[in-house]
Image (tube, rainbow, N blue to C red):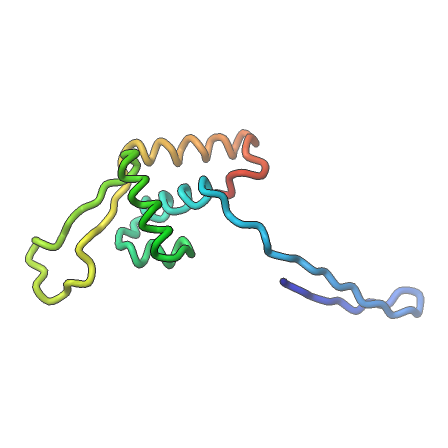
Length: 122
């Protein structure tokens, strides 16, 4: 909950305005998918970085990535065999496919046309 106040004077009276904004709306699956796609498109390819940037926990992120791979929106690249002997923390990277870029473009155009009122916050 975010609160802020403002003290004002009007005709000798003093009043206090308080605005309360609650943040209780959850993101839809579509919003999460689009956000993960945009993060990968922007160049973040490591799963932990994607997780932090999308503000999603590990298990849901793995389900989202697996679903996106099966739909050919992203591809998984195995880099464990590329001579990385010391750093074995990350053996997978992700990159967006042409189909994934088309999905992002489609929803951005829908947003520009005003067809997204409560669905797509890109």
